Length: 589
Image (tube, rainbow, N blue to C red; front, side):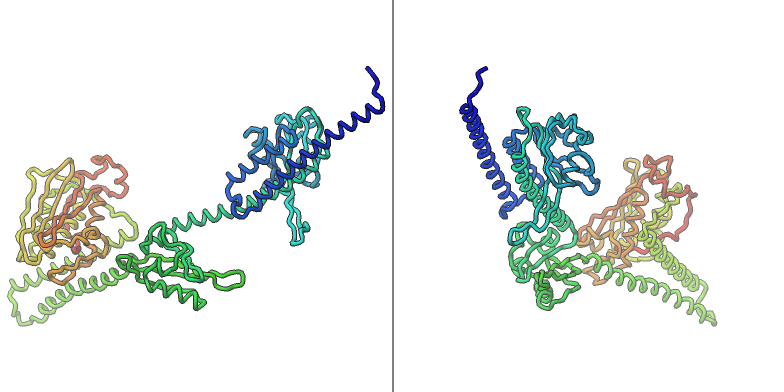
């Protein structure tokens, strides 16, 4: 081997220095470009990173560039988790599988990762497999030969650009420099700058993502609310309307936001409420009637929005639809008034006839007349019992208690005949046509409750055909079920009432008689009594031509005869058939 002369050695050294200078210049240019792109990612106001997908894409690009610049096979970011006290590898990572990322976790008090995190200074590990500090980090499973680890430091600077606060959020690993070359001090200088930029990107993005997630969650919550939410700014412009508010005021899905309130909502009462809140520096709690297109009643609560200087920046109003609540309250008030009248009427009659009999000390009234008075008193007592029974059943239904069935074998034809005979005494204008299928089988049900159903329906037929006519009661068997219908030739039911006919306290205002009948609970009870028998009730009606009410119940409700054993829980033991009539109810629509 020829020994080099001093001149040759100097030339070779100069060539090597030139090569290194060229490589350093290339790395510095790559560093400058990478820092510029990272800075753009973290400071561009028009397109901040607001989703996890955007952050993942940015970090994937960053890791690829670092791998190319430092000639490394693998790189990974580890972030500190205060809840567990661990540094955990984050996805994406360069050269690591998802399973490897999952297992790469180490306590912040252990390993090279923990040391760099605690001390805040870089560490080069030339032989990772034999370094005692890396035992806890499972580097053998990750096929790590050598490593460069730097802290991820987020710096906060003042207006003059001076660093006033540092926060270490994790560490950045670069593994396995290609060509079996060790990481150098130049690599540390380069990756430190890149790590600071990456830490800034991660910190800013996570803050944006957290705020964006909270905003989206708030928007989902607002859109899912049944209450209407309206936010108006200080200038009277609509900043937000949730779906419920748009539905309440007839605003299309894409209309509203960004427009003046007067163009979005036409109701002057709403305008006045919002104006008074903004101008009077006061919050409000009010009830408003809004027509959109039908009248609805809303409970409105407002809250003022204030800026940093405590000036009013807007108002948020919530609208709760209490139309049904107010309607029920009104109907309950009418119900109490009606029940008072319904109770007083038979009591007045009973009192009058009893007083008449007591005052007849001379025997003016013969025995036949006295018996007639007693029959009237008895009928009025039955009427009171029926009304009280209705009220008790209503209380059971409203409190959520089941209507217990006392089952027994019933001759439906006999029961219908008895109820019809009972109702004949209340009218002299009507004819009754009872149509019973021949050989109608005896059935298992609650006699008193079906008596109550029939009494309600036939009594309704009498009341809602004030000019008389024929009332037809039809019973037949169909598919192991009993179908019973009651048809009158009366005034009929307006179409707008059909859907609410079986609601509690609902009464139909007769256009012919200008009178409202009953308490408003008869058909409500009919529906629940039939459903307690696992049946159903329906109505067909034409205004001015009469109505037909039909109920269908199974023939056998006993546990042995029922395929639905769940119904047996609310059914008492079968009782023998009795002729009791105390369960009948006052009928009303």
